[in-house]
Amino acid sequence: MPFPKISYWPAGVGNDLSGVAIMIGVLDLQGDVVEHLDHLERLGVAARRVKDPSHLHNLTGLIIPGGESTCLARLLRIFGVDAAILEAYERGVKIWGTCAGAILLATQIVGEKPYLGLIDMEVERNSFGSQLDSFVATASIPRVSSEPVPLTFIRAPKIRSVGPGVEILLQMNDYIAAAETAGILATVFHPELTNNLAFHRYFSRKCGLAPGKSQPLSDPTWTPTSWTRQIRISTG
Ligand code: GLN
Image 1 (cartoon, protein in one colour):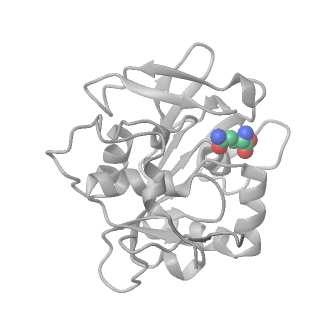
Image 2 (cartoon, rainbow, N blue to C red; image 1 turned 30 degrees about the vertical axis):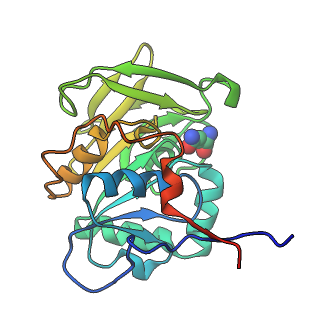
C-alpha cells in the first residue's frame, strides 16, 4: 500500500508574501511547528510558515519552536535563515523561542557555542535529564495571565542566569523558566502543547497585534491531537 501524502502547506495558513506587517511567522525547519500555527489560528492571528529568508518579509514576529537545537542550528545555516533572522531582529521583528528555540536565542550555552545570541542569558541543555524526565507543572505568571498557566517541559533546558536588561518572567526553584527583553521572549516550556493560549496572546501583543478579546484563554476545544488540523493527508 502506498504511503499517504502529507501536505505541510495547508490552505488557511497562507504564505502570501505581499501585504503589511501583520503576520507572525513560525520557523518551519524542524520541531513542533504546527502546534504553534494551531494556537495562533485559535487566536485569529494570521500566521505564516518560515522556511527560507524570503518568508521573513513583512512579519511582525517570529516563533522559533521547540525541537532539537543542534539540528535546528544546522538547518538554519544550510538554508541561510540564521542571517535573515538576525536582520529581521534588527528591523524590529520580535522573536519568541520555545525550548530548543530559547536555546538558539541565548548568548551562552553551558559547554557549547551559542547560535543566534539575541538574549543575554545562560542556558543549560537537557538540564532535567532524559526525555523520560519530562514533566508538566502549573505556575502563576501575572504579566501573561490572570489565571495559572499550565507548563509542559520536554527534555527542557534551564535558564541559569540572565544579564542586565533581561526581565525574568518566571523563576522556578533553582532556575529561570521564562525571560524577556523588549525584542525577545524565551520560554523553556511549551505553551503550544497545552490548551492554554495565554503565551500566544502575550507574544502577539508584544508584536503589536490585538488578538481576539473574546477568546477564552483555556480553549475547551483543544485536544492533544488538534494540531493535525494543520496538515492534510491524502491517499492519492
Ligand atoms: N533537548 C532539546 C535541545 O537541547 C530541546 C527539547 C525541546 O525543544 N523540547 O535542543
